[in-house]
Amino acid sequence: MSNMEPREQMAGKEEAVDLLAAITPDLVKIEQAMQADLTAIAPDIAPLLNEILHYGLFAGGKRIRPLLAVLCSRLCGGTDSGVVSLSIAFEYLHCATLFHDDVIDQAVTRRGKAAVNVAYGETAAILAGDFLHARSMLLVGRGGGIEALEVFCEATAAMVDGEFLQLRNASMLSQNHDEYFAVIMGKTARLIGAACEIGALVAGAGVEASQALRNYGLHLGCAFQIIDDLLDYQGDTVSTGKAVGNDFCEGKMTLPLILALNKAQEKDRQRLLSMLAGGSEERVSLFAEATALISRYEGFTRARRMAEEMADKARAQLQIFDQEAVRQTWSILESLISYVLNRKK
Ligand code: IPE
Ligand code: IPE
Ligand code: MG
Ligand code: MG
Image (tube, rainbow, N blue to C red; front, side):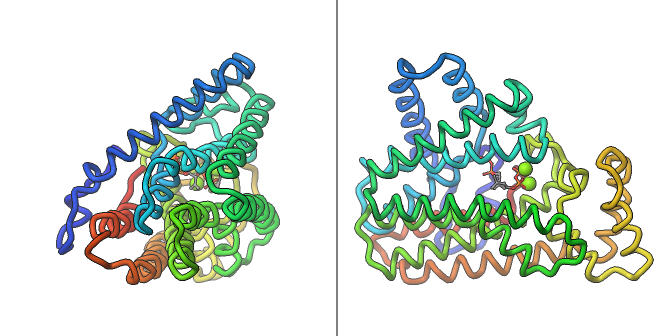
């Protein structure tokens, strides 16, 4: 999370913490746990697989999912020893979905370098993703038992379902935001929700706390994906490490576009629809025009407002944890909400 500007994000907060400084020790532990796990399995796996795992995993990811698991565990009074080695399962599954997602989205750049499908080919990307998926389940089962594994597998299944929903929606030129929210809930929010819930469960939290943290993660995850979709139009490739404009060029219907289409005058609506009906090569040259039309109908500002609403709902879930003993962790989880809204990468 090197792009954070913690002081700016948390200006005016009573319980201000320097976010980056506060999370660095955990990020270091997460990094070390991944390195140690890969070293442990290296003798048993093909050298090429080992190489791809290092290539894909250690390439500048923000590590927000394992971090959330560790923080939510601590918020519920957990001791850190086991949760760090479990938490890396969330990064593994996340990376597995990125390897596969880049094949599906035909993406060429990820985390600032050639995506795995480009560097090693689609077959290798799919297989390496399968390996990480399997390894992630093993780590969750080992560290969290059957209850955690159930939550984890349900989230994984929901991710696949979200991708199918997205596939179906791609051919629906008229969508409302409920359909979009169903997609992002599945493909992004459920894993983030599971990271938070499982963090709580391994700390021995009761139903009220684990469900509050699950809901915190679900709302944070929705905000996270809306911002991702905004960055796909408005971000900067150097910061995001991904190609800007990929969603539009692939014909993906994300929130800014959906909101603009629903509000546009007939002439502009038809223009946007004709762009979507064309080929992806053609759309590359139409990206600036599409962005201007989305802007005209406030697609970006309204999408951002919806991300802020999600962020408010995430924040509300933390109220029950506002106690002196866990003030520092609570404060970090609060600050992460602002980070998600203001992130540039
Ligand atoms: C990208 O996730 C995929 C989405 C769910 C939007 P991140 O933005 O967390 O990617 P990394 O891990 O930091 O590269
Ligand atoms: C997130 O959607 C996909 C996953 C949950 C794997 P995107 O397709 O928007 O993710 P990026 O932009 O490629 O990271
Ligand atoms: Mg993608
Ligand atoms: Mg995206």
